[in-house]
Length: 202
Length: 125
Image (cartoon, rainbow over all chains, first blue to last red; front, top):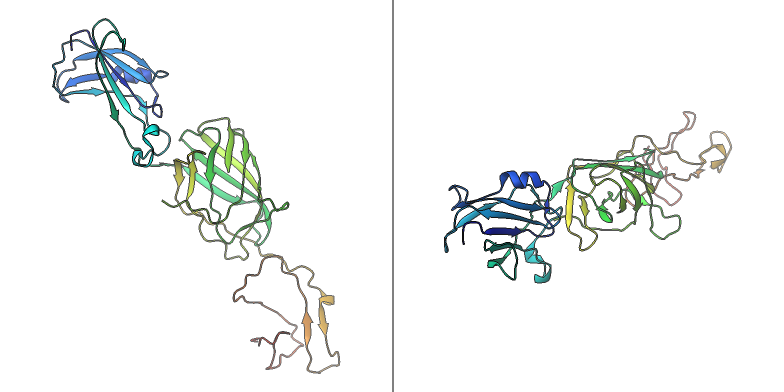
């Protein structure tokens, strides 16, 4: 690969480039893993999910180089690639280009795709509390569920809250639809449903 | 619960749930199961809370309608050995297992050695 060529790494859509500035500042491609950097950053795109480096020396064929990308945020949920179909697998891809640009049709030198990464450690909810408004035994009434999370929450995420068996749900309309509402403005709409024997253990 | 519309992607959240019945006694509850936040489809886990949470009960429920008219005395003659029929309505669920019913009677009543319930269950005095 010639000096002035390009190396482009495309990361899976479940990853996010949380800081383009960090990606720019810490980008490197090194011979082996510890040699001098052989490239400088050319572009970093959060929306395009890619980072491009420009080589400042020719890269030898059949030689191992290590590319470092920083400022990436892991997927916000667990990923077990052994449990998903090939169509849903999240692959990393790497392209090398000749000196005239990053055109897949005109300047592509090499292309590789196939690397996957599992996310195996589920994030912790920082604090969580369940409080009954009336703490008299046997009374049916309001409960306040409060939690603090630094993990990104999106529309239609589901919170599974297994109440202990000593409690019960009194359904006025027998439809098992709990009446739920957001108390503070971080949530606009909440829908609740009561189910028995939901297993949440891993 | 489904967090249908999220206004802030991180931070503090608070939800009110209605019509949940408290534990039946002042013993409170056992611990809640594992609390999990997950995506709707296909249900991939996002976050969890594993520290133990129990639901305490602080105040005892009241028996409804326990007054003089709910205590029926079969024989009203003084010093007679008789039966009392006491009707009451539990405010809480009384589970189908061994429970203790504590009945305090006036000091002018002397219990016999053969006290039993209407269904024949012997009572300890």
